[in-house]
Length: 465
Image (tube, rainbow, N blue to C red):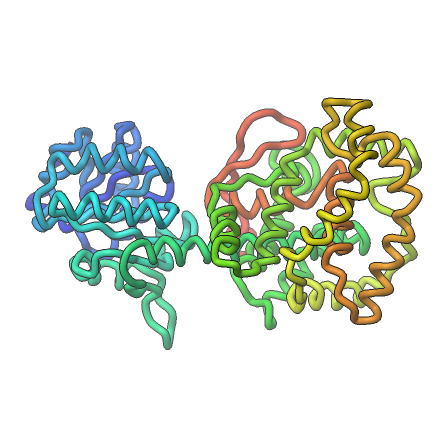
């Protein structure tokens, strides 16, 4: 590999999509950068991309020692590797060659307490440490992400000039980066950001579900609706990419790709961390909590398929029979439902839940006596029979409460759980398509085995030309 003519300004270790794109972004802004990855083919791939994307000042290294020694002192190295053990291993590999005053920056989604632990360990070696949240997905990393650095202020000042140039630039408000604070504050803020993202994506998916399942809107109509919403007060990245997703045809068959995406949403853990931290601090985060529950339920695909059969055999279909709806009115209602929703404090559900469970204890025990491997009480023959008989009244009570302006978070959340669990297919396919669009997280298909990644952005961009 060609060596840099002089020491580079910064180094980056970890060359998955995000790492490659951030390295190219830094190089494109005029900062010579050294890159390293344990799998050396990723190094070669990044160097080739730098050459093809404008002969950018990016230099690849196959071994950690030459990588570290190629960077100007005091050295600054950004890591973009998977959270947890891989971060500790990368630090161990690199710190052997670092000197006092050098800095390591973790740009991944890491639990903030891990960052604080590592910062203390680094300080004992005379090294500086930053935990920096990076948001914007693969496109953002390449052309301008939002960046949330926290930890050593001295380390931040070393690379402030770089971050100010590579971060997203917004007219009137400037670069999307600021020093967050000490310790793990940068990772904490990014964790909360991702939790909010979970909630936003779930609200969008629910609006999609209502419009598609009840309003019978086609994908073209959905694209039109979301495109229109993106022109008004709902203008946002997630609304924009959702409109894009609805317009992309399947390249492996007929119809639209979103309908072939398996309704099983993946996650990396930040949403769960947000909910755990909210509970730790006694802060209600109902929207985020419900979005996490929705992802858990989406993961029970096989159980949902079986549950759907149980209820269909009793004449209880996937979508309940409803009168014809006014599409325009439903679209207007969906905007209101999706974004002005005031959710109750879900933490209170458990107070009622515990009492009910005590009342039903004998019958629950009987259900498990009948089937020790019962996946869920809802599919027990006796419980499913009663649920089917009682659900109409359940819905009437919830509707009456809503129309009367009475909050019934327990009933509503329970009903939502039931309606998700009994359905064979959920709108999780759209959430997974969104994740692949902005984060290259890949998706499974309903008709072909394997993991797939689609360059949604490029296809959508071409269709707009």
